[in-house]
Each structure stands twice: as C-alpha cells, then as structure tokens.
Length: 371
Image 1: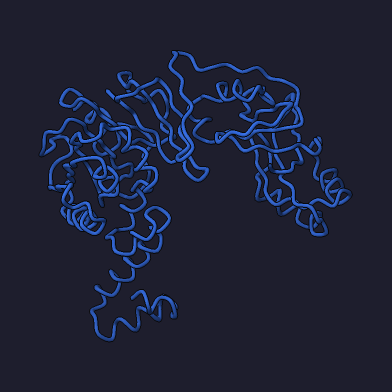
Image 2 (image 1 turned 180 degrees about the vertical axis):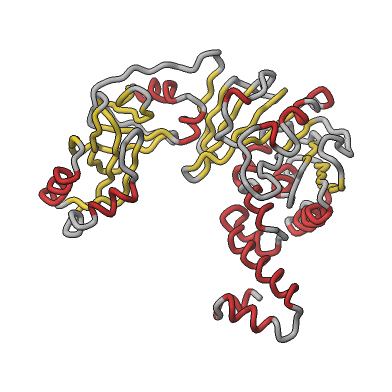
C-alpha cells in the first residue's frame, strides 16, 4: 500500500487493490493509509505502524503535548486513562509508569492495545473494555479525554455534552489522588468546575491545542500557560494581572494563544515591560525588544491609518511585499485583505508582516519586520 501510494493517484491505488481484495477491505486500507499520513504530524514516524480511524485521530493528543502532560503525573504512580480512544495518551503516560486504559468501544480497545505494542510500551499498558464512569482498575491518578463530538460528528460546546460529561468525570475525583481532564481550550470559563484547582492552557506549534483541568497535581497554580518545549507562565492569585493601554512603540508582541486563552497577557506584559495597544486587544507594545517564547516580536516600520488605497500606495512606494496578515478587532478578514493587496506587493522586494488592529478605536495597520 505504501509503495503504491508513492507512485499512483488514490483512485489508481484503489483500482489496483481491488484486483485481489474485496471492495470493503480496499476502502479500509486506503482509509488507514490516509490516517497514517495525517498522523505523522502528531506521532512522527511512529504513525506508520499505528491503527486509527479518522475521528479518533482528530481527537487524539499530539505526541509532544501528551508527553508534556504526562510529566505532571508523579513518576512511577499508576494512572487510569479512561475513554482512551486509540491510546495516544497511553504512549506518553507509559513512559513514567503503569497505565490502566479503558474504552467502551471494542474497536478502539483493540487499536489502543496494538498501538501500545507497536510503540514498545505494551508491557506498561493494560487496555480493557469498560464504561468511563466505572473504571475497571483502581489507580492513584486518573486522566480523562472525553469525546467532544456528537453522534453526528459535530463539535459540542458545553462540558456536560461531552461523553462522559464533565460532571460525571469530576464525580470520580474522590477515588484518586490526582485527576486531570482534557477539555476544549474554547470551553466557556463559566462551565469550568469550581473545584478545579488549576486550569492549564497548552500550546504547540503556534496553536492552543487543549486546556487541562487539574485536581491534586503535585505542583499546582491557579493558571498556567504552557508552550510545549519552552516552559510555562504561572499565576496563583484570584484575579488575573491587569495591564494598562499605552502609545504604540517601536516593537509589537503577538502573545501565544495559550497566554491569551489563560488571561495571562498582563503577566507577560510585566515581563516585557510592555503595554496594550488598545483595550480588549491582545497585542502588546514596548520600547525595547526582549526575547520570549511566549510571544512573537515584530519591529514596527510604520503605522498607517487603514484605508485600502492608502495602504496600497504605501506598500508600493516603499517596495514592500506583505507575506502574512495578523488581525485582532479589525473589520477585514486577512485572506480578503491579502487578495486586495496582491497587486500592490507584486513589485516589492522586502517581505513584511501586517498587524491589523484598532488604536483609539480606529483601524490601523502596523507594517512590521518580523523578528
């Protein structure tokens, strides 16, 4: 299958396989091949021998994200992984101790067992078919990644529409020393359980991939914004830090999405000696450049009040070519603005980034050199 896919179109691969195999088995093989190709971003070379279905792959944590989360459980302590799906999190949890995984779907149970064996951690992982609300094994800690899609495949927006629901998972807290629940990073804060001791937002490759509710973690704070591989911003007071609005300076910072979602932009601003560009706008401005893993830095070349004609003229006159457009509280979609500016930047020789937002409630464009 792998060799055929390298030289033939998908329909040609299917036609070739049908010569010796049933149509249903052919479709399953092609689907698995497509899943393995897509899974390389999450699992690297390990994906080539893993078993997936498309929905379970979409829900599975990326390997680096799961590895970070696993380090927050006590080393050597047994962990129950309920609703384990294809077992992606088991692979990371098994690196630090025994894992008792379970899922109600027998196919996912089989996949999780295979994937653990393929990854070389099968001796640390036991996978059983069990209801998530009645874990088959007693462990010191428990991790839950509930399904966040309806039976029709649509994403659900309320925690109690998860399967199992947030309420059902939190009810298991009394059975374990430590409980961690993976939820959508877009989950409304009003839905977060009041008993959660910490909320951690986790970013990887520039995207906020998940939020994790922690109960009884070995090291816990109220808020944590983590950039995988680069560290965390920590906050342990009731109210998030506040930052003032200031005049735009020569440097702009675009905070990492985990920082924005965790409401720790103010904490980052203090570290950078920066202020907000505008109220309710999560761009920071500063007089000096400081290196940080928690934000992208741009050097401001010029600030232009927004007007399409004016912006085109400015880019053409300066020989500038926009290669990316960022926006917050700005009336034009980046893709549409890039199309409108394509001709103006066609003769440019210097690549720039456009940061579009509002200053004093007026739309402006910062033409920037990305640092």
